[in-house]
Amino acid sequence: MKYTFYLISHKDFPELVYIGSTKDLKQRIWYHKCTCFLENDRHYNKKLYKFIRENSIVWNEIIFEVLDEIEFDTRDESLQWEQLLIDQYEPNLNSMPAWVSPIEQKEKRKENRKEWRELNREYIKDYAKKYSEEKYKLNKEQILQRNKEWRELNKEYNRRKINCPICNIELNRNSLTRHIKRKHN
Image (cartoon, rainbow, N blue to C red):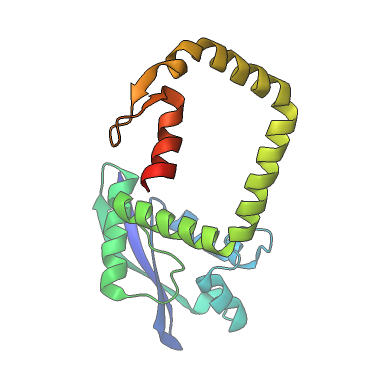
């Protein structure tokens, strides 16, 4: 599929540029024009559109320059090429990178999650406590019944006598950990 890579600039602001790619340049230009002024569009607050609105730029003054027209098998390949152009031209009106490697995406998600957890530590703690309490209240009878059944099933196993590996005293199996903590630590 053929992709067109373009640059948007303005004669009065030559240092401010935007790099993009598309399969249909006419349709993409039309989309840029519409999106710029549609307040309900999710792209309304992107740098390019804010710049155009804040500087009262007329669309006739905007320069659309075709940088490349290249055949690619997938959209992902075209985005990688667009990212190379972004890295080369260093446009300041692109709000985000065109392509990010899966490894970089994973790292970014990891950083974002860590930051969110740090900012919301109290919320997480309160939520976990509330969830545990609610779960226990809802399932109290089931939990108690399951614990009782487990104790019955494992009664013989827990009553087996074993020797402490440190002092060689004979103990019930379920007492060993407590014994070691109290007597040998």
